[in-house]
Image (tube, rainbow, N blue to C red):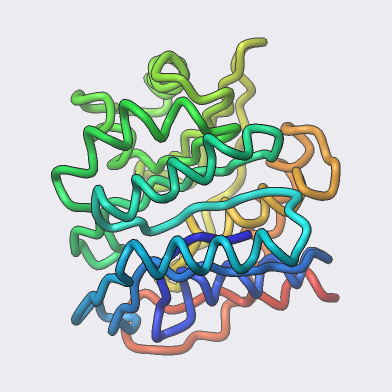
Length: 257
């Protein structure tokens, strides 16, 4: 089940999540937290879904469908986040992948200030896997992460906030190599890949988190789920359709070949 905001451009958010889950052989149910007006150039508007209606969506899904994993994306505000915390606290038997969506690719804020403290204190301890990018990790830790050498310590510091695992994504760092770090109670695992020179990277965070959640739902171990998710995102970037005039969407059909 994906709990996230809608992206009218369909490159990120619920639309990217559903396409990703389908491409990797899963089935996604959804609960919409907000409706956005956005395209590859940025976010023009956000309309939150009332928390009472989000709660109704969740109850409707849980009353009828099975649930093998939960992935959260844009939550927007503290009231919405509180509903999601209720859900995760009631289903601790189900893997929960938390993508702490805080800032859009174009720079727009997607998480209210009063929700950040709630995220840190109550949502993170319910995460099976937390998937922050570097700006999100810096916001959560309150300190900069200067380079790839600083990423393992930062991932472990995030782990100390309560999630069972942290995948810290290094795509915002300069250079030809992409470095991601997976931290668990067993230690740190480092993943590397060559950077693909392109501006078509809208929705990479949503896509990676949903791909990892799909793997966990299918019974993959955490490391294998992350490795498959990273390979899928790389293929989706490499074959991006080139749509829009800004940060364009990925090719979510990359897993269907």
